[in-house]
Image (cartoon, rainbow, N blue to C red; front, side, top):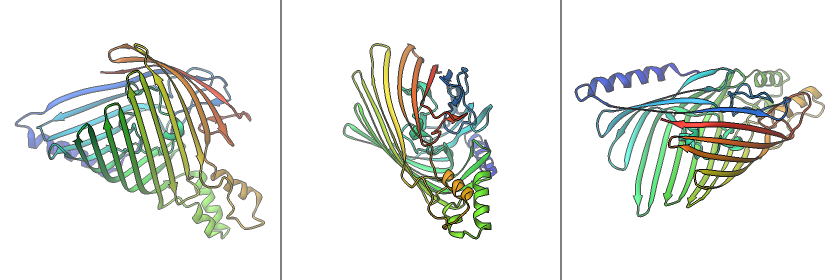
Length: 396
């Protein structure tokens, strides 16, 4: 993973300042961790399954790559008001090797009981479970539904945020507003650079009910994407300036809006999320996605089911080329404008066999539409595909 050099200098400066300013008192250190050890396979070797932004998946040979990870988080508390937190994560992501990422590294100042301020590398709150989507033990499902969680690959930003938390009777309200920049390495050996990213995260909790709203806006550049660079250059060389602008990959405006809710009442579990992505480029499609999960606890066992779906909101053909344009160019443009559409029906079982560990078994039935969806399909195979997974989530 690539990180902006200025951010590295910032984190080092913050850490040095923290140690210098509070060496007399000495910090209180807390170390925690989480992980998943899992095996995943499909029912057909012509269909590979991978999590969002993973470079390679698995076919009908079982593999650890898609669903296994390991993370460690450390917090140094120097006073009731001041602390620093660092989190690292090992997993397979944009390259086909397990690698380490610095997912969080921030300084936190608690101004009072309601307000706190953070500066550094902070998790981007674009999804309902953004803060713990990599902590399998904290989630009922073995993995977040790809239909929603593959829409934006960004996990963190370098900047600052303000968090407001207050109780209103039986309801706790949390509002998080942040601003910063981010560079995300994408499978396929290219980067997406987010500039002037702003985020708003609002959560209301009342007893068994939680409702969450999220919104993120940014300009972004797609850097070193060979396919999009070739399309841009071809359109410009052909004098098709408007078409080239339609497929622009620099200074693209994008937004992501999501609404989610959970119910954890007695033995019943319900979780749902609805998300909309919009951009000003046909190279990054406008999409709407959602999922609904239902679960029921029976002692230490929780069987669950979820359905996820994704649709494209802009056209799946490009009509901006002049009549008589070369057929290969028309086909190329139509290929780029198509988002990977699919739906998933999944059945799973969670068994809390230990106080800090859970065994999960999950079967996904994935149906791609008008293309491979989020799968890698080979030899003309079109699906549907069954994905089998078994894993142990743990925390310490």
